[in-house]
Length: 392
Ligand code: NAD
Image (cartoon, rainbow, N blue to C red; front, side):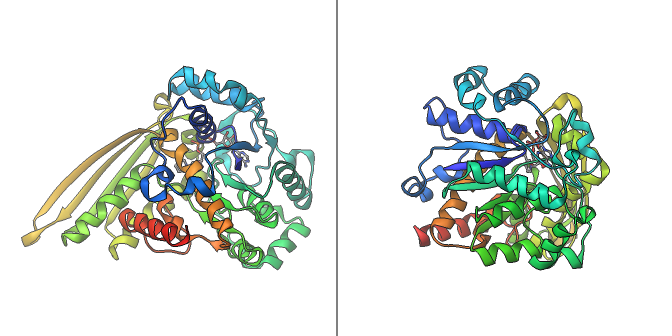
């Protein structure tokens, strides 16, 4: 299968490419891949583990190998031998120039960027260019995944975002102030009838106009924001408190990270979407809102080693207050990259089974799953398992 990555030179994208190629070459194990677990073994019959990659970028890095090497120099997130073993595969992956419309002040931290809008193109022309790039790469077995930097919270427009007609009018009338890059990429993918996933908290395909388009075109899509670290632990642990009828009184989550993602999230406008995405999970699972602090701060020397410090204040029998602490210290790209391959395979599987619209059963992979209130990781896993066994 083929995967088109928006943000192709990012650390999550390049780590997914390296992992896929290293596994194909038999030099790395499939550890970390959900789709390799026993309940999903028959997926190999539908979607063999073989990938081709392409994508859009705004950082002119030359090719995916050069981008990956830069990430490796900073993070050393796996053995260098693995990178060199897949070097030629990655050198062949050259991303197309993308758009960064309304991507916020955070992307200024990315260094030199080149975008389609700098060429003076209208929204219509930008969408056309993006769609042409994707079309010339894709085949009937292609999935588009957004792994670009997080955009600021959407400036909602009833007129342009609530229907396909409104969205297309926004493009025709070149109303750039209401568009954002992630929506334009999602629109292009869904128009081309290619399954789409949003691994970021950016709007992507989650606005009503694009949900309608996915339904109309019978294209499966899923999102938003990969659940990989602190939120994964939070949504796995919270049910324990709920099952034992322990009241969570307060939950403080303090995240520090470096690298490009940390730099972009250090900008207040870009950070707001991530905090919102993380914040909502407790209320959804518990049915009440404990006092909650969610902080994300840039900490350059950590690079991609995200550290989350969590403090939970909870009440037990006789009203006694007690405390629970945990520290999650993981390499962000290492926990995220396999999910890109999993999501792509499950979405293509959905397409092959004739499914269109939001694939709620993929909620397991996301912090803010679309159209479903099941946030509990255990329930989400069961949902995925039974969906797959029903269809396969
Ligand atoms: P990164 O900064 O390494 O990669 C992002 C890439 O996107 C960069 O190469 C950047 O140049 C590119 N980009 C930015 N705006 C673009 C645009 N409009 N069009 C095309 N390319 C664009 O970040 P990352 O660590 O790889 O994370 C990628 C995304 O995934 C972020 O939004 C992050 O919040 C999200 N995410 C990551 C994790 C995780 O790493 N565990 C979990 C959940 C969500």
